[in-house]
Image 1 (cartoon, one colour):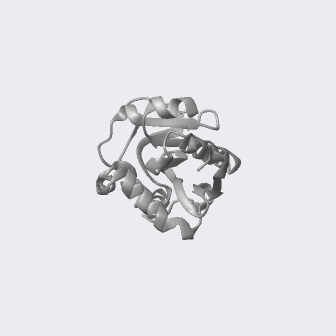
Image 2 (cartoon, rainbow, N blue to C red):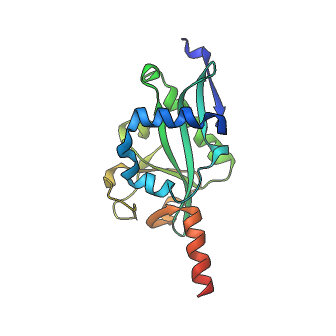
Amino acid sequence: MSLADVKYLPENPAHDPEIEAINDEAFGPGRFVLGAYKIREGGPHERALSFVAVDGDFVVASVRMTRIAAGAGRALMLGPLAVRPAFKNLGIGRRLVAIALEAAAKAGTPAVMLVGDEPYYGPLGFKRIPRGQISMPRPVDLDRLLSHEIVPGAVARLVGEVCHADQARIAANVAAMA
């Protein structure tokens, strides 16, 4: 395998079984109790802003984006990002993040947040979200809440508990009817 053989493509439904296998391999069944997964359960991810890396017809890595809300702020949540073990440390994950961030900017997304390690994501343009600004629906290490601001001031608008954007719309509609 050569890195020249790896192609980066928009995710499509045919990739779903391989993406699930990669995520299971990378994160195991314990991933379903994490705060980020709780948010993802609130609605679908944005397939048009999610990408895979393939070697031939074999999916070797993927990244997904999910629309989120927190207070008046709206953003995308990046993740999960997973790379098959045989393809790690080749820059594939970093390339997928760069592609996803570029797509988010083109789509007019004001910011992207994630739960991850600052040493990995910091060089890709992510910074810590100030402690106490946002919370997750399940416990999370607050030092791992990172954001990439596309529109100046967008991260400051993310305040309170993060939820899937569809859940925020439902709550707003219920409040409006009350």
